[in-house]
Amino acid sequence: MKAAYLIGFRGAGKSTLGAAVARELNVRFLDLDVILEAKWGEPTPDWILAHGEAAFREEEAGALLEIEQALALDARPTLVALGGGIVEGAASLKILSTSAIPKIYLSVPPGELWARLSANPERLKVGALSSLNELQTLWEKRRPLFEKISTKRVENCDINESISELKQELAARWGLPL
Image (cartoon, rainbow, N blue to C red; front, side, top):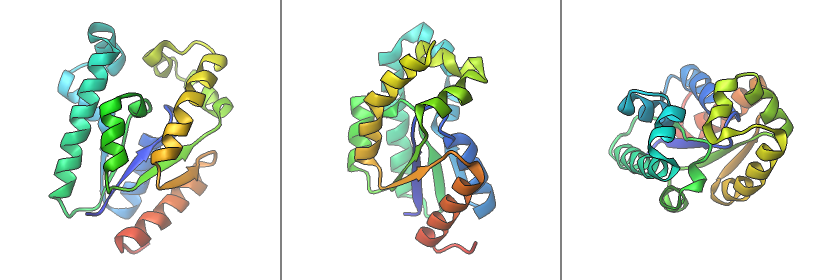
């Protein structure tokens, strides 16, 4: 199976980097958040507001399991961006912990994450982040979980360097030309 998951905090670049790398390697790219929003017909913050975070984590785990099963049957190289809080759901964490699919952790320091997220107020709505201190607390909670399940870590402070590193990693792993 030629697949990899991109994991990391919201604003780490999973969607942006994933789409760019997939385009350059000419492989399929999936974004779990986009899949869920298409299913619901509304943005994630609105869905969470209406249904609650527990229901969201259940939906997220169900979609992750469907992706995991589909990837097992599909030989196409596929890069999948997962949601920034996916490690908060026990079911999702279990799926990821036992999955043979590599998990690439895009690591970004909290200050840089805050700069990225605060530049787009819509990104702060999920989880109602209102300060760097709140983000720091959440980051400290999730970071060890990302580190525990990851098979590779990429420091994503420079997008061009990160794209290059990720392209080389995946091309080598999947036997693709650069």
